Length: 297
Image (cartoon, rainbow, N blue to C red; front, side, top):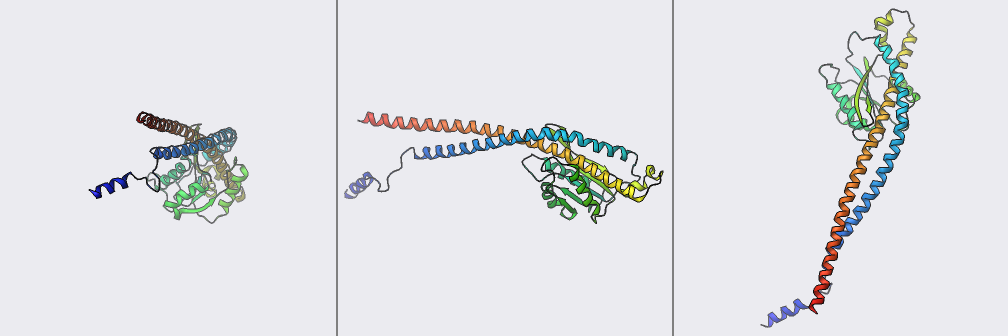
């Protein structure tokens, strides 16, 4: 009997540390939701700003792409009269991407196209065909599966609208390199519309192929002429690919930031609803406690 009274007296005594209020858990949850809501709103501001910047850059990139396509058309007219009698087995793949991210699958599309081209059985090429990459993003992706094929990489190209000087510098380094190849394939993203793009592979005829073609054998030319023409054609093709890939990148970045802004808005709506419901529940509980205490008096 004495033990029961002692236990009852101990149970009725207040805790020395102080008891937590009933709505402490709700207040902590509301605080977490409020902090997350603030964070998502800041992210939405960033994505909207990046979308506006990408939209402005896209207009400039499209104008540069239209003028750069003329270089590609000039190459096409030359290559139409120089068909290859035997397909090249050891090709040099020039992959055109960039150093920046946050633009959807723009880099993975050219990386996948390169892997498919090397593994293609209908148009077989040597498994050790060299690869040169313009841009760090695709370089990282291809180094995971085709590290032995990587011969050279370029970065800091295309940070702004690409110029012919950039393409000429890349072409000069390729020609002066010790890499052996029979033909050249440029892998880049083709601009379909403001919301769509697709990987494209364009073939570039090299110096030896130009010399052996029937159209060039009909004329007497010095070796330097053929060599200069091959290098100039390579620079033209790279420049046309760079400006079109740059337009695709800006378009993909604008679409990615637009989707991110929409997702952030949806998350803000859900968190706001959750916060309001939690706040309303906390207020209701406090009113119930007040009414219960008043009625007890």
